[in-house]
Image (cartoon, rainbow, N blue to C red; front, top):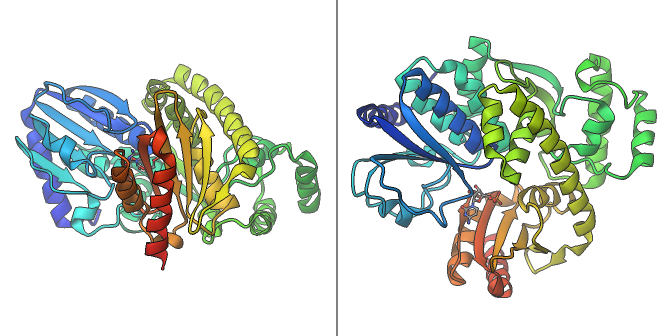
Length: 435
Ligand code: C5P
């Protein structure tokens, strides 16, 4: 792999620190990228008999440092300089969120983040990729490239730059395969089209439209996605492109959805889209140990994960159906306020990429604990001018909250009494950046 030598050097130094310790405390994010990164570390650490404990967190807002000699923060940490600076132990950060502020370490500290090495962490390498680069330095862990790629799929990244290198390494080793196909989940075509989030095709509870769609392309909805012939796949791809145009999906959707499909051949489900869906669903409902066990190869967990995912997807589709008419217009943003909804992130992603892609979208979920969880999303095109991570960070600070993330996908946690003030600031900042 043609790695930038400076990121590799830092990874080596961080590994030397790791090897000095008997025990490692790992904190990772609860989404598909964070859980895949956690699985990479767990597998690699098992192989060198290193003891560890791993926790899956929503973020570091409520994080209290523990009395441990070495903490590793994965898919989080870079944006929380104050929290990290308060830790009285050795620390390694494996993250791809944009670093914010100076970290003043109290003990030995290594920060492995693509942004610090001139690599775009929003699109070209995820936390799983960073964890993989780290794990490669303490053993032959190249078979974990499939997990690195899975995390990048979860974060909707591109397979150029470092991700492209990791993909190539996995293909060469035989643990990854790339097919010409359509990026859909495995299973019956009708179910795959109805319950897909990426792409979201707006067929949920639109049975007549779905049947018409099948009639037009001359393919039975009962057919298995994985058994479609090349000719059928071509017809399907054309019809999906038309459907996405009709819905008004974001620019760039075709390259993401149509063309190639990544198979992770040494993981329990080979279709990366299906596996990401399952891992994400488990993470979102709090079943992180199920998601983690699936990636470590547990079959019972996989069965459980499939059930969780099916239920979760329907819940989100219901939510989108109910709330799409409640999306309100600001000046430069759109927003939606929800009350104790099961999960804001997938709702925000679907609405912002497929139904309202022309303005940044902010979804606020008022929780019972007096806080509102915010998910902000926009398209790559708008993010060329606007940085949602910065918008979330600054607007949250203004109302005594905390926020951050990526240019296209960011979030915040704010006091629920301050929603109006927060939205006003978000709108103002977006207008300034887009001007
Ligand atoms: O929760 P959600 O999926 O909307 O988060 C989007 C991104 O924003 C994630 O990368 C997450 O780490 C980041 N975020 C953050 N601070 C928060 C909430 C989310 O940095 N308080």
